[in-house]
Image 1 (cartoon, rainbow, N blue to C red):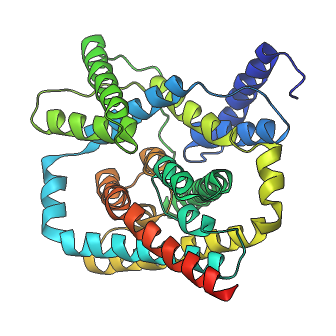
Image 2 (cartoon, rainbow, N blue to C red):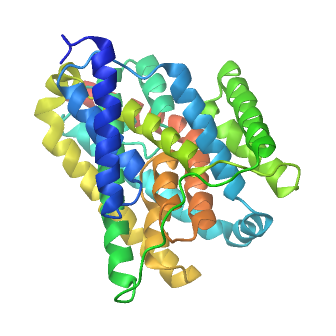
Length: 358
């Protein structure tokens, strides 16, 4: 596929993604416009496609998604978090420790070289972990591979769970609401939303804040929205394009060279991901029991994917979106705050043990 003209590759990527996205959407698969482009991206990436999503496009997509997340936050949700913060942070910390333990096992068992398993197992902040891992001397390609394999697995499983849950809980004969992809919208509010998101994303990148293109728009838009200074306006067709760009970015990272490099460790990497997903699903029971949230909301709130991908899935299903975003945001911030120091500590322990075993 790499021998095809780039224009034809782009046409195949776009056309196939639209087609698959429509098919998945027809069968009511949540986040069809993320999942479809991601699958097509993986297929083309593993078949030596030479095209890549420009970095500026990915930053723009992250900024729009950050605006969507920030606009979903309300003062009531922040108050709820303040009231339940011990449970929220406790569950978040347990997830982070569990992922670090799994990474440590991968390193100790020498499934992956050096300290790759520690950095690759972190549940979120993928780009930050890849950069930190490279600075620590770990193989950045394998770390990125682990991070994005986890994202793909989590997105796929979460979409299937959400689809099954929605299908099984709706009363027989209930029609699923038709989504209005081209609603009438306020052009001024739309422009202001994009301006705030864009400026925030640029500042996040310039200031070198980890995941700043997503993080700063979330915070800025949330503050402005809660105080009534900004009416967030993002039409469905625009969000769909944003989801597709994120899906393509993830999918096209799976190149033949990276797959060949990681082929021998792939089964054990997948096993560790399955264990982590299962562990987080078990933790969701605590949310159902103590906070009386519905099981699907609890599952998505604790799912170990990236904040962006889980937010897309949650936004396409009938769940408590703000609660999920609070839980995922709490883990996102915690990963950024204590994830790198924890990973460095685990990496040093692992490196010392491996050196002692020689």
